[in-house]
Image (tube, rainbow, N blue to C red; front, side, top):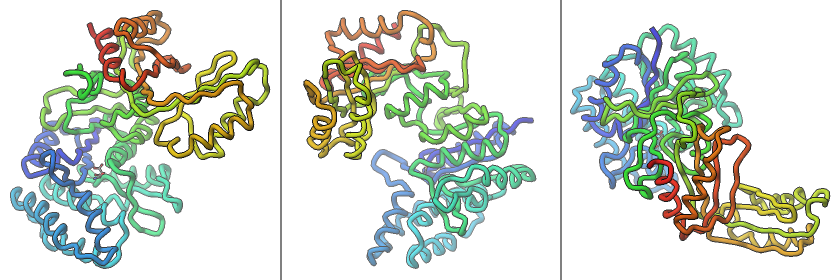
Length: 437
Ligand code: ASP
């Protein structure tokens, strides 16, 4: 029998009712043997996340401020769940230990990790499954970088003799034994690591949305759900800010060829989105999703005979590097080169960048175009299939939208267009409509 590793996000464990749903899901399929929980998240929109409360407690304690008020709220969250589920754990004693650690100079990472630790203890108790502390099996190196090799060895050996277990997400430990967390949302990564170590046939990532949508629902009204997406498409979308899954979560499972299934805890009968290495069943010419971001600036550089000038590109990029600015895209013409940068990266440095380019490249003309947005139209169905670009550009032309830049990477699964930010929402809707009618 194959193994399924399941990861449940914070909203899936936000209260006792959600814990019950999680249990039902786990018991519905015997292959779901290993579960990676997050810390309890928000119960409703303006609620607090346990992880945020823990950070707040730590930061206050570090300043010598009183943490009781926040900690009492935190205690209330955990006790509320534990009592409602009738757990046989002494949660008060566990919480006292955390309180003591907070008062006694424990690290910020340790403080944050207690959300997952306690959530995992409760879930293990509720299910009657073994609890495996992530600090014993998820390893970081001395630089604080995740140590895949050591973890794989340790964790796969540990899981081999275990029937069913709960392994809290978000943290592991450094070689000196100190707790270290991943970046925010990192339980997704933990789940992927456990899936790989368990040799799972599937990594289920349970959250509070139906899966991936073809477009941002704040921009497009009721966009269609995506049933299948490839890892590569997902990378392209993640770059554009699609945030259902942590960016780094796909690497451990992708390398092992384990598919990820995004599922909805609040609607367990829905199939969700399947993330696969490759998929041949797609409709040719179809697109998978559209994503975009505002906040870009283009620096357009013109110089006669640029194409013949040795080292021109290096000098332009050197100027950016010296100013500590990274670039996002670099479309070129015969005598023109445009450097597209994120405003967040460029802000406060633009004058300096222009000055450096002027000095090192002696361009004929240099222009700064701000207020741009990028839109990525992503689809494995467009590879070696004519017509996608024409449909896309026709949609924008019909909507009267001017395209400021076009970039199609050699992967051929993504066409990026830059439009003025005032046109952004209209452009996304026009592209969506063109490919879904
Ligand atoms: N609890 C952590 C956070 O809020 C990690 C996670 O939920 O994935 O970022």
